Length: 174
Image 1 (cartoon, rainbow, N blue to C red):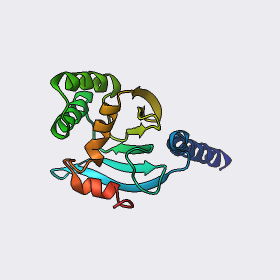
Image 2 (image 1 turned 60 degrees about the horizontal axis):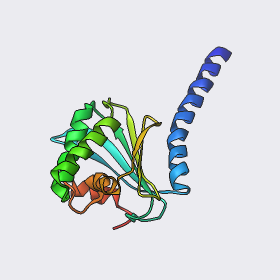
Image 3 (image 1 turned 90 degrees about the vertical axis):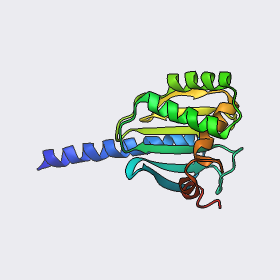
């Protein structure tokens, strides 16, 4: 009986540690923060991911640090994430062909293949950089302010392909 209780204590400790590490990442970059909204991206009745928006302020301000946390519900290859991101950036911005190719190169080097249950955290910092974590481990950063803005605009711009998801993310803002 004591052995079983010991295993349960270890299991709960591991679960608590893992859930606290996402919180620690957010605290490290946002200090005090607020969850603004959450939603699910589904395409043709297929759930792709759950996403949440966190901010230092009680409302979304593009020029203040914020984070998106994406919990994936299906497997996606790196190239699928990059292709979709580039398509969205191209659709919403005035980026040149050379800029888009540069963005593709940066995003390809950043994003791994994703599996159901994986988590991606993207943070827009005070310095306008993008910092990214995959399953609570740093995977890199983007120091191009235009790309950082364009990337997060995929979810937060008024021009997003998914206005209902945007509305859910900005619930406490609009």
